[in-house]
Length: 87
Image 1 (cartoon, rainbow, N blue to C red):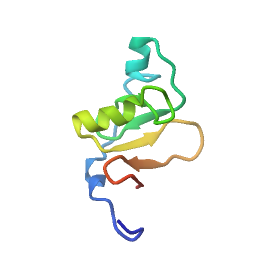
Image 2 (cartoon, rainbow, N blue to C red):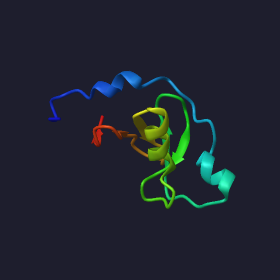
Image 3 (spheres, helix red, strand yellow):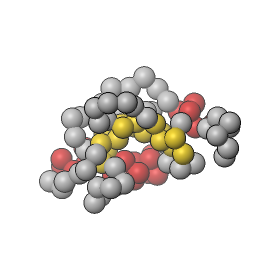
């Protein structure tokens, strides 16, 4: 996909609110995370690919919700797991 191409998965983006203040699965399991990612389809909060469990990517793969947004303070960005590209 070129930079001039619009990612077709942007259609999955919804107006969502985070379902938790931390990675939902890590909180349940008692495991640590590095950064958090917000699913832009359902509001699931999962840990990033630098975290040991990579729950945000697993959520995207299992339920088919491709786009996440970072939850760190500062500028926001979005990532598509399907196309491995910023959107």
